[in-house]
Length: 402
Image (tube, rainbow, N blue to C red; front, side, top):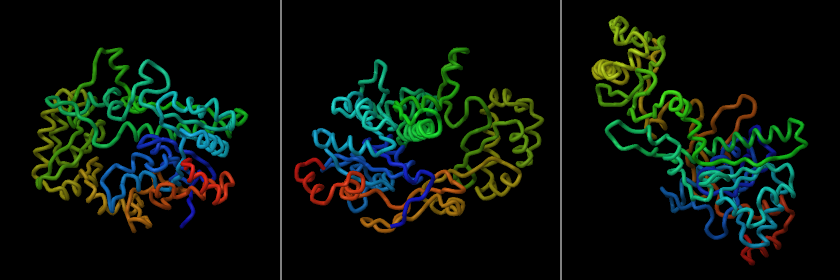
């Protein structure tokens, strides 16, 4: 098996989280070379292993989301397991956990305990609503976070109910924020005058998505406006929507600055759009968005997707087809950028999955292996990290500790 590459080679990460959010953070770190040890419950493992669809009874979510990670089993409810976790934390740079607030403290594994063992430990905590506040003890999944962030209220058409995203958006976004925050804390630890001290990072599921709804609170505060559902349009600029071509395929088109709108009109060979006072600037286009959308849809409906792309893109038109997985897998740009890579998995054989994003010029990341079997790396990790031999690891297993 090839060695991992990337700027984080040498970084040691313990991932105690379950399902998506913390696992996304550790997945990103693992993509770029960190040694990520996934700590799982003996016998059952991470519940993500039970998410379908399955191939030969194995979760494809698990295979992709836990790629490049090592799996060990450990019973954190047992005193012996708690001591082993302290020993592992003493060797780690980052620990990621996603238990209810207070659970790690009850086990003697909270930040105040583990940072006594390892003052440089960066301790990333995931929960639905954060470690403080009146909702901190509520159970929270990404679905609720998406609802309470303000995002769902804006999603859908004016005459339809609000819509949830079809992916675990809040969880995955929280994972990105957690990975970013972890690297910030490591920078402070290693490159400033912090004397090598780590810190605790409190990541809720609702706040990262709330952060991406950038101006909403300010708009409400100063103007009393709450964002409403506008379908595929954009509240603050036009045109921007989805349209159909002559063969019934969908494409996205955006011309939300004055220069791009003027370029679009020229590319479409419809200079009359520029002379129409309804479309003279963005404010006018917003007031007459429906009429503009109808004109654009009429023009696009008379042409095939290939004709639209050939005519608009060379002239600077910002337009692109709506892709599904089949079209992504067949796209030459995705292939050229290695956005889909093939991995040889001992359980499922050759399999393709999403590549490493973003691209580094000097220290690119890599996908070395897919998600591991439960406890696959017990002997390796407990041996190399803690110096335990095979007999000692077997003893842990016989006592139900691993």
